Image 1 (cartoon, rainbow, N blue to C red):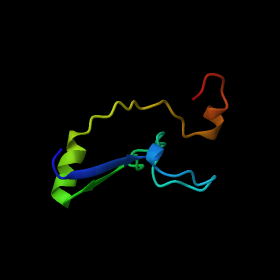
Image 2 (cartoon, one colour):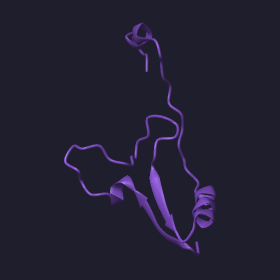
Image 3 (cartoon, rainbow, N blue to C red):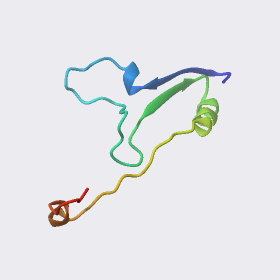
Image 4 (tube, rainbow, N blue to C red):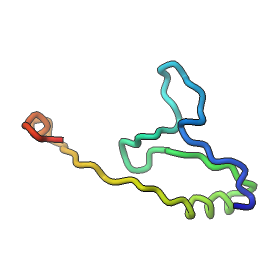
Length: 74
């Protein structure tokens, strides 16, 4: 896309030898950063983000610790 200079994912970042990374390939919650876009301006970056199509699916979860111990529980 014109104006987009780079798109970075967790695979593009250096190995930090166990330190926390700013991006992830396996998000644990909605809103966790999975990529970064560098563009000539904020509007171009926002348009590029809108064009990205992700194939993520929500996974089952539990919020009760007792339920998490039951057989077959996520």
